[in-house]
Amino acid sequence: MFDQKAYNKQYYLDNAEALKAKARERQRAKPRVRPLLTPEQRVERARVVSRINIGVHPDHVTGEAKSGPCEICKTDTSLHFDHDHRTGFFRGWLCSNCNKGLGMFRDSPHLLLAAFGYLTPGG
Image 1 (cartoon, rainbow, N blue to C red):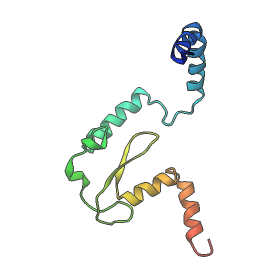
Image 2 (cartoon, rainbow, N blue to C red; image 1 turned 90 degrees about the vertical axis):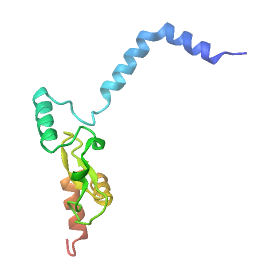
Image 3 (spheres, helix red, strand yellow; image 1 turned 30 degrees about the vertical axis):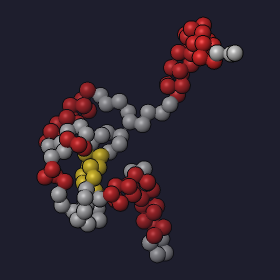
Image 4 (spheres, rainbow, N blue to C red; image 1 turned 30 degrees about the horizontal axis):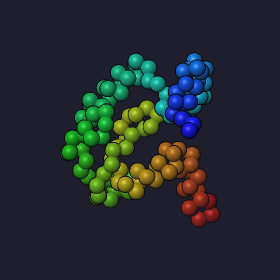
């Protein structure tokens, strides 16, 4: 009987360098979702994060910052931590619908303005 696991292991051992090089190339070809931060940007991010009393992750946010209305629609409901996906900077507290809406428009002001024009009569 053919042992696929043993074959795969031997194939990897025989071609390890080529497989690793191919994997590195695939990784380099992938676009970065968020660019790497420079040391100065990291310092600025830490300064902003400490000033607004939050940690790097929304779970580290103090309870008092979560109260109040959504910063877009002003509804008084449970709020979600909103941040800029390119920089990681905290932007504010949004209700679930507004947070998802921004995500659907990929945080693009151009797409949001196009949607506004579409919804506006005669726009």
